[in-house]
Length: 398
Ligand SMILES: *Cc1c(COP(=O)(O)O)cnc(C)c1O
Picture 1 (spheres, rainbow, N blue to C red):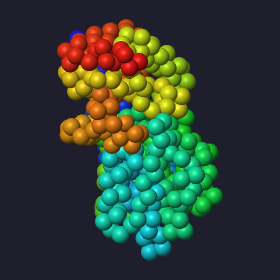
Picture 2 (cartoon, rainbow, N blue to C red):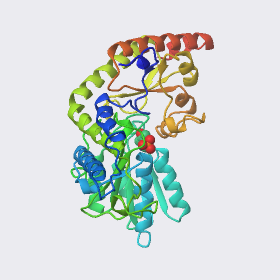
Picture 3 (tube, helix red, strand yellow):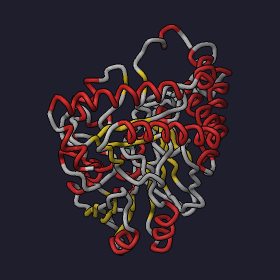
Picture 4 (tube, rainbow, N blue to C red):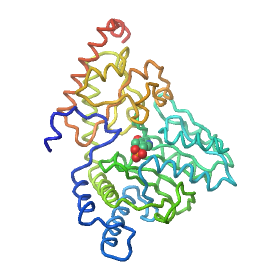
């Protein structure tokens, strides 16, 4: 650990981004310096060397989702992958089909892509979720029409960490012969994802959510059945013409190494994260009354806990514990004070949503940090409730 990493707030926001793993950084560094070539240069050693490294990385990405290397398209991140998958497929098949199905707790980049398609004349069905954060499979089945081109449902929700039943969703889409896309930005490297077993046709993931670099993502585009899509940008034909532009070789290498490390460590790491989350949840529940979990506990990635503290304003709580880096929800919408569209979709009131915090435990979180953070939060919750005078009411309501 470098000096720069000491005396910093305890980082519990690993769903917003994750630090680059030292093994990933080591793998990347040579490609910024001696091995700096353009991977598309075909006339000399520098290009061949960078291209070879990119292809190794592509293989590592393919392996973690059980795809073939030629089914992996590099992008700038999951936002771009989601845009490319949703708009790209819809626009390619627009003469035959004009309906898509998604759900209300999707990431804003998925919902916004859907809104854009509505402006272009497509029809979208937004499936609701129940209190646990999961969609209803019968509702999905009923929503699919003859002119449905794509179903897009995220594998793991970024605010509440809930895992959708992708195998069942895949089976329904396969049976109805509709393409299935999944935003798996929070899933790849955290839970096993097998696009073949799950019948997923398109899958988005991103480097910086799995201890890789920011600015690099990927879209898996299945070859069987072959998915066609219209590119978002025009250019020199790289990435099969689907996503032209010079590939950032150092970032590709880092993303690849991040996938390799994540796959290797997944089982052991998930045990460790579950234990840490158990400690955090127990400390908070036992420390103060009125602590409620948002979303299902069992069908959830081990690194996530999203909790409503009755009668406490989340913003005030965060301000009271500056030594802990947590968030009230998605980093992308944290600039406005609107309540989370995800927590409202789960049925929380505005007030409950505003009293919720998301804890994201990660690879570098220690037990000591969890103990310190829970003690500080308990103190702050007690203090805020005393100040607002509703301490007694919450105790009585338990
Ligand atoms: C972070 C995230 C994104 C956006 O990914 P970027 O690589 O930052 O563009 C999309 N969907 C989900 C579920 C995410 O968690």
